[in-house]
Length: 405
Image (cartoon, rainbow, N blue to C red):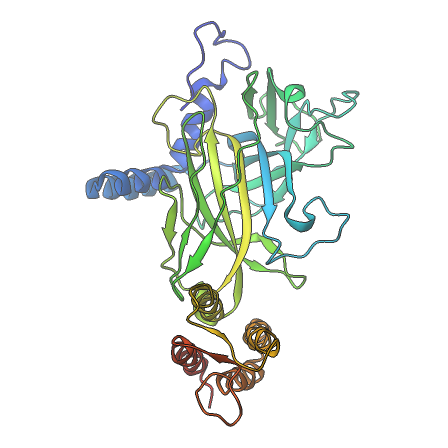
């Protein structure tokens, strides 16, 4: 919930934002909010109460169509782990670069097709236009939840970068129920204020580590928040070009205050590689202390990486044991390093084949890798050390899980 300074006129467009906006958003996501507090205070009764209220809200909302619920306008900083994603030199994300831009979204409900949502008074780089912009429609992540309408303002040739040009303004969102591209009397409206000095490039969560097989634990370094804040971890499939498919969110941690999260779902059971987005989320400066982290988002940052349950576990094992000296290349002279890298490439290739659905090919690749670390001198092993038998066993475990013969 947001509380305005006493000097703000509650009858102004910005003032009307105080409770209507945050209350509607909180009602829609009471289930998430109750789960957050239940985890925080171990209150089982609150979980039960949350489920009961969700049922009432779903029942209540059925009789209403064309509703405009929560809206947000915030700064967003994104980074792609260069060891997992490859971008052209012309890309703003090339080689792990961080890109900072403005992002907005709104939530709606109603009978399909959804009424369009318009964002009024956008900030252009030349400040020469104030025509409303229609947000892009995206179906809901939630079975009974509202749908999304989003717009990233990342093209600095058209829109100003985050900062002063966006601040000290109140932005309007309206639901075009008449579908004429204009705001008409009686159409639902929500507003979102951005006070001076509230936009900043939130630091990216760093040193992300993922391990633990099909139920991995993701951990990262803490981020310093100025206002209340928290974290979120989202999971996505990868497109054919190897980038996150944002059209479908496969899983989420909901809001976190810890800097780790253990995933307990089932998406990693198929052995494929998935995108993992670790976010830091900072609340609006007018948010009442103690609000749910992310409830009134004003700054967000995040890093994208990938994880493939079994193959990633083997790769992590090799990296960790190589660092301690328990696993090293086997061979004369400089050939030892080459053989170690060759074995790592064989394991990585097996992961790519699993992702492509070529299980037979992956099994063949894994068997070849196993023979390079099984201790049998024929053919010669590519690695040696106390950890070599453990590596061989991990490969056998993965082959068994895939049904390799």
